[in-house]
Length: 270
Image (tube, rainbow, N blue to C red; front, side):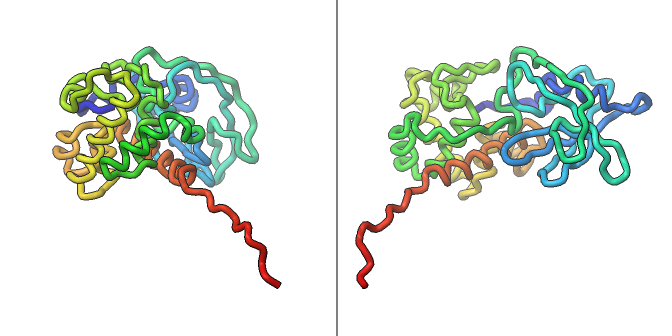
């Protein structure tokens, strides 16, 4: 989402794992740590780092009424909470790892207004057939990578041209009205106008940060002012997870857009 976030904004987003976090919290504890673990493009939540996953710890205040959304998916979430022994301790996870036994099933629903792209969530398959010509042309014109441009669009809206966020960002590239005006976008829901404006913005960010895609992605999400204030990627959970998702999608689109080498039809001479 191309807007500047308040430093405490990520604290106002309700977490769809509230039930999970409550279950694993110790009665006497005032804070708890949940590990967000990524493995093969899927996210699980656990009380200890999972073997084979890339895990990030986040500590929550038990007294907090609202805590961040680690899943990154709006709408109802259902699954199973498992327990297993790890390093002599009982740990809990939403991923069924070897040695796990189910504890309970859960269904939780995040409130309206939660960020759909908040965190990695389920990345899904790359969608190279949507507005392909527009993406290719916009990337070429603005001298940025096609895979990166599509990764941003995928993370922002899932290529939904009519997407509107709770904060008012619109279209495929989720441009705020002020951003649309800046890039002279007449119809923010036009795939062509949205993608071209998003490509121009990413091109400018790429030049500003001297090719550092991570910083440019952070600025697209949280704003140039925020990146400047922190002297780099801001320590917002929402921005860090957004970058992680874009990076994962970028790798998928690089592979998906790679030209398929045709086998030579010529027969080898004997």
